[in-house]
Amino acid sequence: MQQTDPKLTDILDAAVEIARGAGAILREGFENQRAASLQFKTTDIDPVTEYDLRSEEFIVGELRRRFPSHQIVGEEGGAYRAGEVQSTAREFLWHIDPLDGTVNFSHGFPMFCVSLGLLIDGVPSLGVIYNPITDEMFAAARGLGATRNGSPIHVSATPVLNRALVITGFSYDTHTSDSNMKNFLAFQRTAQATRRIGSAALNLCYTAAGQMDGHWEMKVKPHDIAAGIVLVREAGGTVTDFDGGDDILNTGRIVSSNGLIHREMLEVLKAANDRD
Image (cartoon, rainbow, N blue to C red; front, side, top):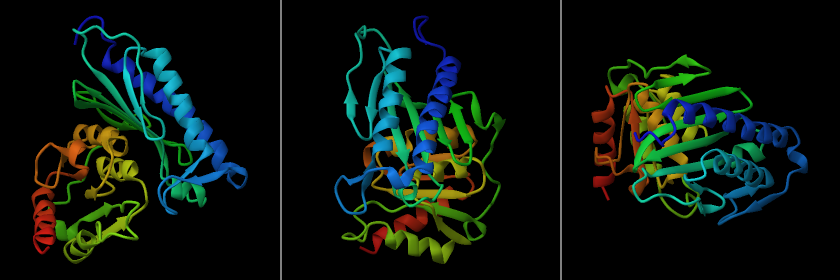
């Protein structure tokens, strides 16, 4: 890394502070959600609240203040223009989700989070995910390991899929598309159990922490998973696309695991999709 680049540890510390600040906004909204305005982006199951917008405004403002040359893409506001960047500089690109789990939030279900993921020269390099209700701060950076509230975390040691607890999510077009259901049913038959909590970012956190053995999802956006990819990898896990490759952010198809069951998970997904 060039001398003009901020240290990864300093960026991580800043991201943790920013996530806590955004989390305070969401906590306020959660406690006063009856007064919160609710709108819909694409369908009746794709909501956005004033707190999504307030959280993103705060995050973008802080990132611009601290790292003016960094590029930013937010879920609600799209791409934000950065300050002047020298052509020789490394590319720093933030993918931020100010409120992952908006449906949960709007129903008073405390499984939602703030997610900040940083790509450096196109590589997921830093991730911070914070649930302000449980006060769980997940943080990781390349080569620095992964932590929850400052304590190291590691993926599970479950050796085979039929003993594994796996987790997934469904996209907002699930009412009109088969989407992920065939995969869900396939894992229901092959894993010990399957779960869904409504937040792709938290799915990756719990895989990194060893509470879930594996996770798969499709039709996810970079802001959903950029941070979590770093967490799982730094916790000793494996993250690929459905084909076992690294084209995760472009395909929107992700498989993460403790590594031990990864091949079995890919085989289940291939068999489920080969039946089409």
